[in-house]
Length: 97
Image (tube, rainbow, N blue to C red; front, side):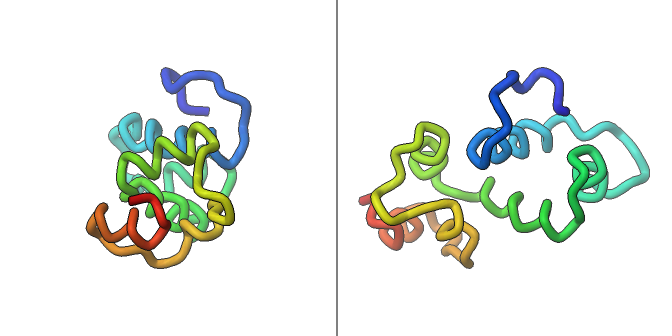
C-alpha cells in the first residue's frame, strides 16, 4: 500500500501507522492528498479524514496505540472523539498523565 513504511499486518494500529507514513509519501498530483490516500486504501474521504485526525495525538498516546498499552477501557473508538489540541490535555483526558 505505502512502500517504505514497513510490512506490519493490517490492523487498526498498523493502519494508523500506515496513515502517518502515507502522508509523507503522497505523490505530487492534482488530486487532494486525502482523496489520493482514500483511493490508495479503498476507503472514502470521510474515513480518511477521521483517521488522519489521529496523527495529531501526543507522542505518548501514539506509542501506546502502536504498542497496545493504552489504559484499560481506552480504545481507538475513544480516540476518534474530538480531542483537545494540546498534548497535555489529551493525556489528562485519557488518564495518561
